[in-house]
Length: 165
Figure 1 (cartoon, rainbow, N blue to C red):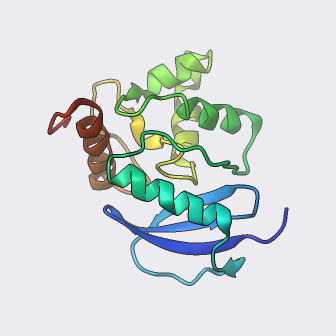
Figure 2: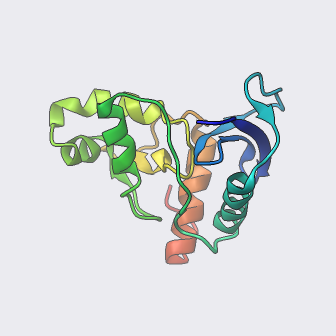
């Protein structure tokens, strides 16, 4: 597994804490103030440099998908949910019910929503693209203003339109 390195990236929607090994990115979370990485080593490796470059391209509207390896600990169900999130196209949204249907069980809507909220790799694993069945912005670990900004950014880049919500 190797060392886990941590660094910070100042994005247009706030500070992001990035964690990664030499093999994959394992964390991309919003922080509201610079915190000390209490685990792993402060610093960057080649993969984290590549991730930072892709984030810069994403925020500038030049990138619609990421092609860096990611991994986060989770149950088999959680892994399926996170894998399904990667299939939501840039500039599009699905509802929590749509997500449960894609997983093959409409009764799993709460479990799918809960797993969506446990995603530890924001933006790259696009949990922000899941919204309420009534098209409302529902919970987001980074806060609803960030979710709204991300969705509007993607919609603008994809469609050249100013607002979705």
